[in-house]
Length: 441
Ligand code: F3S
Image (cartoon, rainbow, N blue to C red; front, side, top):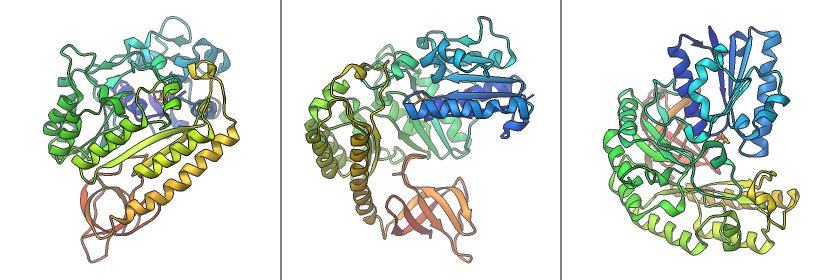
């Protein structure tokens, strides 16, 4: 009864994988880290952009080998890949025994045991994704956890497939989220990262409705000393109440993850983003004046249909003006099933790549400048891994897991030590372009 799960895609998908792993363990399966040892292999997939689709397919084909060379007798593919391509993907990948879409995660035990009716592809409406109380999760890490507060998205960004894969927004009841936060903090988790497709829009669909600022304040209390960070915010939903909540609670991370995607008004309009550059600059100014030292992260898309050289220059100037603490840049990924595919003025892959590289080159200098101001400070650092004797990796409250830079932490043989999963005071002594270097004091 050994089972192996591979989770691809975003942090929200990781939560789904951890929930499925918890369900499977309760049903008697033991989870293995070695796919060669597994009787059943589950791949939870992503199909957000072309590179993610290719990674999902490559992973499935790679793991399908264990049906010949290992012990695997059943391969299950879950999530966003079958949800996007539906029965066509089942026809294209005959190695797979069962596909289940995002609306069928709760049927994972049946999918694994072969107990599902209705062929190899089960795709109930994603609006039915269960988002209430979760069973015991099989979490990937002990000291940090993602906490899903809502599922789905009710916006209409023209480049994004996710609302079709995950349905309209469905917020979890607040008492379920608070109970999970208490349980995680009580079990020793030092950092809760709130995730959803549209995190800061939380609660608009609940009876009441309930505001994200209210949830933040309640979570600050429920989480005790644990850091609480939100990811995937939307600039339109950052109210003064949200900024105020972060300013008033030391365990709410002074960290604003706000993917703005672009700054040129014409491009933003074509993307279906209902704000302009002026509003963004005003928002960042309000955040920085009320939460001094806050980190602001964003992601941008270059090469969107219709983006001109002048639009790109405006974006570059915007990045120079805001001086983001963390920045991810993506080139536009086209697909026939996206509304943006119909827009005129598609940009060549080469031009998009050049724009990407120009932005990242500028950001590298901005990041190095920003980090230089940290040298000489002593900051709490969550120690996450050991690289070699007396050298660890960790993160400050201003660095999110997986997407931002890290801190390389040194210890002295006769000085204070560091423990993985604990927070240590670290004097910052030096920087790299995106990372900090320091020693435990
Ligand atoms: Fe990918 Fe699905 Fe997340 S498409 S980015 S795994 S919601």
